[in-house]
Image (cartoon, rainbow, N blue to C red):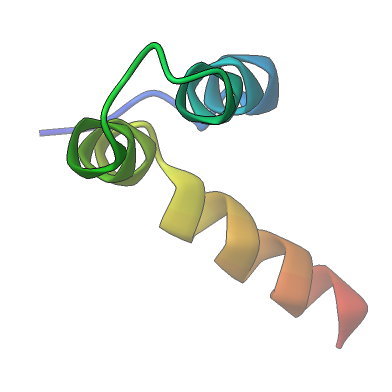
Length: 49
Protein backbone atom coordinates (compact mmCIF):
# COMPACT_ATOMS: atom_id res chain seq x y z
CA UNK A 1 0.00 0.00 0.00
CA UNK A 2 1.39 3.39 -0.97
CA UNK A 3 1.49 6.03 1.74
CA UNK A 4 1.30 9.73 0.99
CA UNK A 5 4.56 11.65 1.40
CA UNK A 6 5.29 12.99 4.89
CA UNK A 7 3.69 16.33 5.69
CA UNK A 8 6.24 18.35 7.73
CA UNK A 9 3.57 20.78 8.97
CA UNK A 10 1.42 17.95 10.28
CA UNK A 11 4.42 16.25 11.90
CA UNK A 12 5.38 19.49 13.63
CA UNK A 13 1.81 19.94 14.83
CA UNK A 14 1.86 16.45 16.34
CA UNK A 15 5.18 17.19 18.05
CA UNK A 16 3.78 20.42 19.47
CA UNK A 17 0.82 18.50 20.92
CA UNK A 18 3.32 16.55 23.02
CA UNK A 19 5.16 19.71 24.07
CA UNK A 20 1.95 21.28 25.32
CA UNK A 21 0.86 18.09 27.07
CA UNK A 22 -2.19 17.53 24.87
CA UNK A 23 -1.03 14.10 23.70
CA UNK A 24 0.91 11.46 25.65
CA UNK A 25 4.43 10.67 24.40
CA UNK A 26 3.59 7.14 23.24
CA UNK A 27 0.76 8.37 21.04
CA UNK A 28 2.95 11.14 19.63
CA UNK A 29 5.69 8.66 18.72
CA UNK A 30 3.13 6.45 17.02
CA UNK A 31 1.67 9.40 15.11
CA UNK A 32 5.12 10.58 14.02
CA UNK A 33 6.08 7.11 12.82
CA UNK A 34 2.88 6.52 10.86
CA UNK A 35 3.00 10.11 9.60
CA UNK A 36 6.29 9.41 7.88
CA UNK A 37 8.87 11.09 10.12
CA UNK A 38 11.44 8.30 9.54
CA UNK A 39 11.01 8.70 5.76
CA UNK A 40 11.36 12.48 6.01
CA UNK A 41 14.54 12.20 8.05
CA UNK A 42 16.00 9.63 5.65
CA UNK A 43 15.29 11.89 2.68
CA UNK A 44 17.00 14.82 4.42
CA UNK A 45 20.08 12.70 5.12
CA UNK A 46 20.16 11.51 1.51
CA UNK A 47 19.90 15.10 0.26
CA UNK A 48 22.95 16.03 2.33
CA UNK A 49 25.06 13.28 0.75
